[in-house]
Image 1 (cartoon, helix red, strand yellow):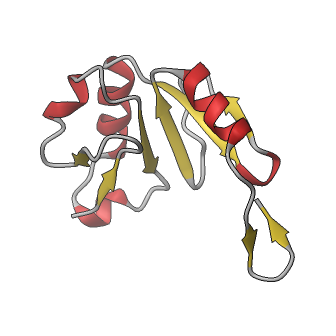
Image 2: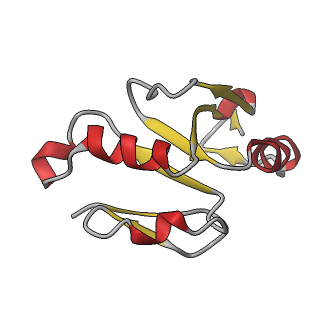
Length: 108
């Protein structure tokens, strides 16, 4: 079953046991909710409702631009949805993170 590691915490958000998501020390969760969850026994709509109900806002990451886009409770539609409690903290980390090269020519 797919699992995600929540940045900064070491917590795992396991589809089978989301009980730690109530912990307000957990600042964010990154999920890929692209419609393939049913194949792994994951109800993506229920997971989205659960995280939203625990105080997480939904965001899309435009990594190449170093921009976070507020989704106002919607999912990103494809790829990653960021579920964030402290948007200011995350925006500062995205803004101030060191740039690095990927492959030949991509700079993030």
